[in-house]
Amino acid sequence: MKKIASLSLDLDNKWSYMKTHGDAGWESYPSYLDVCIPRVLEFLKERDLQITFFIVGQDAALEKNHESLAMISKAGHEIANHSFKHEPWLHLYSKEELVEEFQKTEDALQEATGKLPKGFRGPGYSLSPTVLEVLAERGYEYDCSTLPTYIAPIARAYYFFKSPEMSEEEKEKRKKLFGKFSDGFQSLKPYKWQIGERELTEIPVTTLPIFKTPIHASYVVYLSTFSKFAARSYWKTSLKMCKMFDVQPSLLLHPLDFLSGEDAEELKFFPAMNLGIEEKLEFVSDILEVYAKEFEVVDMRTHANSIQQKEVKSRKMEELTV
Image 1: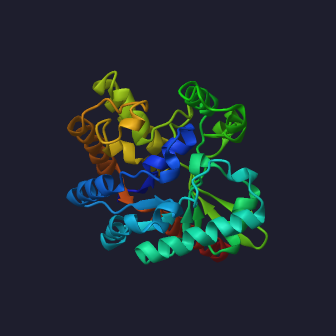
Image 2 (image 1 turned 90 degrees about the vertical axis):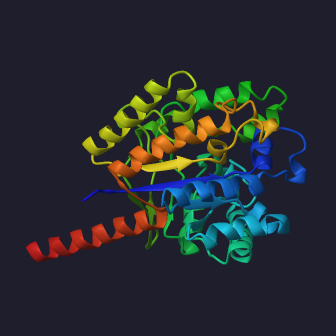
Image 3 (image 1 turned 180 degrees about the vertical axis):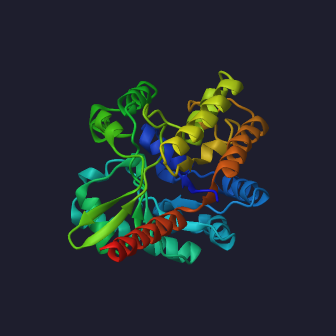
């Protein structure tokens, strides 16, 4: 039987990218959800894939987005929490601020989609002990905010290079964007956070075993702009290494994997946004076709539940052998 692997999409909207980048005009919450969501849902339906959408609470709070967001839950996909304001400095929040952030997001998601989230991913992979404490207290089942990679400082430097108008104050807030070098030493396999008497499953965003370079879709699509053959080879090698090291991968998608520069001119500076939409979708399709051949692809909550069931079974076996 195939081993389980998960698939999720961080539904970062146009304004959230502009905000993190320090661009003017984000306060009016410009959106591409009405274009992106139907395109993604049709893409997933054609491939019979059920995934998790990590949705920003601010988008769910706006009436103009309700119709598009409701389509996601109607299609049977999991709804999860991606914070309310999409600020990748949650580690600077107090507990009171985090409680408010989570409450507002949960209320907005339930209003827009009819679903209460049980999973969380911090924007920019931001996480802290206080975030974990609030997640546990609010009954979340899993977190997916860790990215085990050594190249986070390089990614952050590139982001700042592409943001010449960002103030020093704003850069200070973002000094942990994408994580730190030591994150590369974190486990690729799911594990448990122990928060008081509660446990929370952590499912890292998978990176290449040993080397810890990214393998999420946006990175592989970017590689394809240099060589499609090299990008496909890298992706296939990554999955083989995951199997070799008994890693059940968790692949991350972004809206920009389904958009071109023509769909969002403000975001043309992002890698691979120069690709035509047909060319980009064809390559993403290739990635997911290989993924589905190698693994049983499920949403994040199903992945988390399978981990829990495996642990329960393991404990029972231990009891029987004692």
